Every structure is written in structure tokens, then in C-alpha cells.
Image 1 (spheres, rainbow, N blue to C red):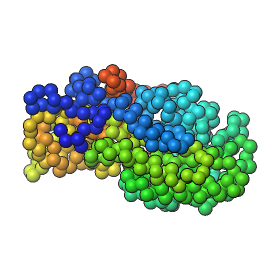
Image 2 (cartoon, rainbow, N blue to C red):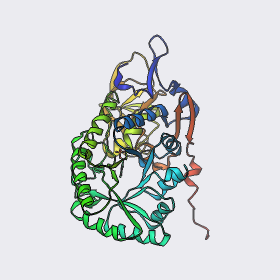
Image 3 (cartoon, protein in one colour):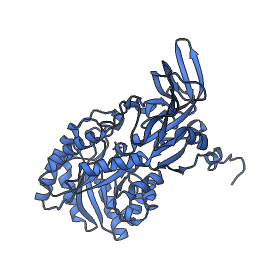
Image 4 (cartoon, rainbow, N blue to C red):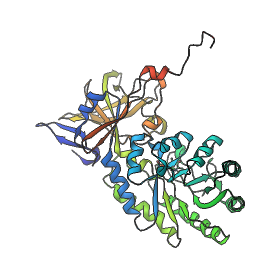
Length: 434
Ligand SMILES: *Cc1c(COP(=O)(O)O)cnc(C)c1O
């Protein structure tokens, strides 16, 4: 088995017969999980997540830091509990995400940073009540609203301004966030003035500087460039009389969807060097907000082949998962590796792998060479742990998949499969007046 279709330590093949190899998750058979829980099914490896957190901890061991896992990458409570037990805090972007962390208990809330350009008053109040670590404020207006909410609740909010460093990162345009033309952060030139204003409110405590330049960035140079700019701002703010204790470096480290994580430890240490270098002479506590690089390779989406069909020149493999379950190929033209769970000696063929949804954008792979698979066979879509289930929808009235977390051979259903009744529960036909 060539290593690029495996995702150790979570997902590896083992030989089960003379010419047959099967993919398992921490030695639990994926065929068995699909039989037990049905498909489409998300399966996550706890060991893979742990290993990733340890790689970050190790790469940043020379500096004071806190990993604030970005909840939107995968917000399942079972995953958040695991990360909290590993000592992680959280980066949240909505009231719903704050509530998820609240369910983990008060100590988890104190390690929360709250980002987002459109925080509402109820969300801000919920964050103040939860006594979170820091608000990453994204505009002058938000700063005023936060000061008013904090005064009303008689609580002091620790704040950072999210600055827009105007750094370009080579990634998909939808997930690039660090340019002046993007909606995020405040322009660098306005930051000092806003910090001065914040320092005048007795309900705001200036605590940090934050930035986040985008997602799925695999080149370290933009990170280093952004940190140079942030470091310069921190020096300036300290000269202005503020006491900047935290630098929130954002998330965004990409993963290798094509070849897997063979080189991942290396990539985290390269990233750490890019981040730490520019901050070397500053006594700061680093906040890191990785999402994808923690959970991405730790999950697969299992799906059964429903039909094979040929339309003229093209061969299609129709599977029971669709863009509502995993939208990354349709939305970002992402290319996930797709592998049969059982491999014997079969010839590769060129196919499109598509879902049942009524639009042509519903595909997982186009003109892709994959081992020939039969109807009824089980496929695994790799690296689906981040922005998979968290972006899933009910389009075409399809219930969302179940999620399973495997931890050292123990299998936990961390989200039941939705039912059609769940989908309809909030709707009314509306013929009778209510
Ligand atoms: C989405 C997001 C992250 C996480 O990005 P990844 O690419 O998943 O690491 C971190 N911080 C903020 C503010 C975000 O919006």
C-alpha cells in the first residue's frame, strides 16, 4: 500500500487475506462501522487528533502559548471534549459555538477567544457572562457596543483588535481573509487610535493584538510577513503605554490533501518558526487558532457505491454521500483522496464520483483514476475531519450523517444520524390558524 493513501495513526490498511487489504480506524474495521451505523458516516480518530495537538505543543514548546482550537472546523461536542481534556482552549465565532463550549464547563470558557465581524448583542452578552479570555474586536462600532454591554453587565472585557495586515496568502479566494479588500479586521492605520479609545473605557481592558490571514495556507511566508507587522504594532502600542500580553496568531495552516500527513510534523515546525521568529524579543503569550490542521486528516467520510453508469464517454460512480454531507469539492474545488475500504488486485479506471443531489456541482471527484469499484462497495473520502460535518446541510431534504469517534479501539457514537422527522420537526403545513 503506498503511504499516500493512508492517514497514520488514524487510518491504515492491513492485510486480511492473500490479496486483500482493509482500511481500519485505530484497528476498528470501517466495514464493521458502516454496517453498524449506516452510511454516509463520518469516522474520526482520537489518536490522530491527540498526535496533532502534541505536534503543535512540541513545536511551540519554547514559548508561552495556548492552542485555541477553531470550533467551526468541527464543532461536535465529543471532539471539543477531547480537545478540552488535552488542555486546548477554543476560538469561537457565534453564540452557538459559545454554548457548545459552555457545555464543557466553566474552565473551558476561560480559554475562549471570540472572533467574527458580526457579533450581536446577545452573543456579546453570552460571552461576557461566560467570562471568556478575550474578544477579538473587528470594528470601531463593535468596540462601542462591547463597551456598552460590558458596562451594563458590570464586567470587564479583555480585548484585542483584529488587525488586517494586508498580506496576501495563496489559497482559495473564499478562505483568504488578510487583504484590505476583505471584510475582516480593522485597517492597520486605524488600530492605534482604536486602542487609545478602548483604553479610556473602564469596562474594556486592552490585552492583545490578533490577526488571521486565511485558511488552507501551505506556504509559511505569509504567516511570517503577518507576524512581522503584528510585532511592529505591539512595540508601538507598548510605547503608547498599553500593556499587550497576548498575540493571537489566528489559524490557517494547510494540510496536504493529496499526499497525506507524512510530512505533517515537519510542516507544523516550519509554521512555528515562521510565527515565533518575528516575535522573538517580545514577552508575549501566543494564542494559536488551528482548526483544519488539527482535525482535517483525523476524519473520513464513509460512503457506499449505489450505482455505476456510463454516459457516452464518461463513467460515473454514484455514491450515497453528497455535497450536503461534504461540500468542499463543490464549494472550494477541493480534491479529497477517495479510496476503497477493501483493496484487492483491481485495475484503476478513470471515473467521476458523484452524489445523488440534483445538480451537476454535486461531485467528489472528476476524471479521477481510482481502483475499479463495484456497486455495494464501501469507499472512504479522506481528510474529511475539518469543514465536513460542520458545513453539512439538509439540501434535498437529506438527513445529515452520523458521527463516530474511535479512541484506542473504543467506538463512540458522538452524533446520531438525523431522521426525516428531525428535519421536519420545526415546520408547519400552516393550513390551520395557530
Ligand atoms: C476559520 C478560522 C480559524 C481556523 O482556520 P483553519 O484554517 O481551520 O486553521 C482560526 N481563526 C479564525 C478567526 C477563523 O475565522
